[in-house]
Length: 372
Ligand code: GDD
Ligand code: MN
Image (cartoon, rainbow, N blue to C red):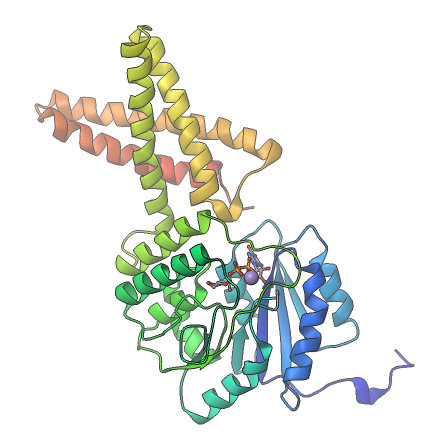
């Protein structure tokens, strides 16, 4: 410590925290810090990288920079995934009165951050969004299919959440921390669309301004957005529409369960009617196929943020079978009891099914996808 010039030690706290979620972005982080530093002279900023234990060593790259620049910080999450939750936890990890969220891959134009900050200070707004869809903004060289998908999702978002933004799907924005804190208790935190989530969760509509920019091409690495994010987007929209009556995870679990019933009857019919195999065996195999189908779908969709892999995948499958077997027993027990008390057969069956869905959901969240 003795050889450090005291003037290097920065005692001035940041007024702007830039939250940067990362997953496998090792090659992008250092150039990003340089670009931001160049774009924000005279601003007291800090950068909070939120890394989900990227196998490519992103967190080490960030820590290395942080050793020579105290404006660089890291939140390192282990056994977790998820863009929205990463942004939220990054915002919660700073004391700065203004927070911005920005991708690490240079697709968001850091040169407009200074304008965004000026707007929020002057215009008395809560949120400034970097927009690709307003006059002066653009999509750069995006594939046509992705342009169409993005526009469709944008239209769906404005219809369902009634938030006045030209680009509600943007992952690039700057806001007052106190405004974020008001949305916090209502956030869904699923998936990719953190801005939409924050705006739709605000108890009092946010005052919003927009600044145009042109979306750039990715520098290094690849996009983490795959077709499964569509499912998460649907979960977010459903959660916002049903106002927290039903947890989004349960909705996903129940939808997968409904599909599982279809799979069960498909296999049963094929084997019993089609191949002439005995009913008992057909029914047993259909159950195993349906349960496995539900297990893998829930692992990929419902519990995407804590997906089981390798050996835990096998243990998870075993525990899910046990959970579903007890759930089925409860289902049959309840339905039998009601039927025995002269309840119409369909009315006897429904509570049984509902109880087993809730049971399977509760038990699998305890034993199969338990939080570590
Ligand atoms: N910590 C963490 N955890 N970071 C993640 C995760 C995750 O699970 N998934 C992605 N990221 C990081 C990436 O490393 C990158 O810095 C940023 O989040 C955006 O991810 P990309 O994979 O580059 O997303 P994209 O370019 O396809 O989508 C972007 O543009 C969309 C516009 O339609 C994002 O900004 C979206 O939020 C935006 O909606
Ligand atoms: Mn990107």
